[in-house]
Image (cartoon, rainbow, N blue to C red; front, side, top):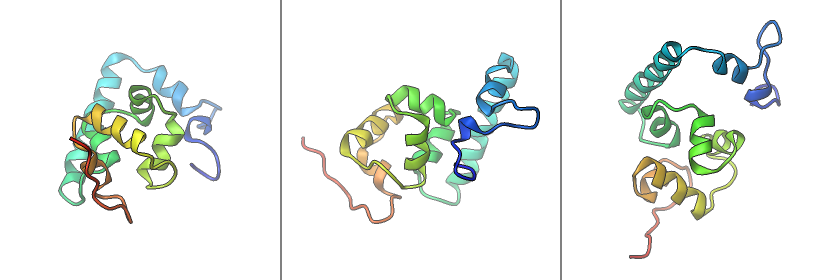
Length: 120
């Protein structure tokens, strides 16, 4: 959120939304953006524990791409990356599945969350 607005509704100078700007890029530019996200994730991994944002960036995904992969909205992903909002086990499991990690890895960096044990 930026000044109370969803990021997808934020307009750049000239009235273009961020989503429209990204959608209008050619494959080479999109590939460069994906690589930049992955490089950012590598840098973050050196200074902070794995979390939803670093796992997403390691795949080179935008919040919107992750949202599509797990059947959530971009706004839900943004809240989860800030450790706010929905913390239900079904959401944690969907995220763990798409990242191919255990649910414990998803919640490990979550303030106030305890380790969980999934049934065998």
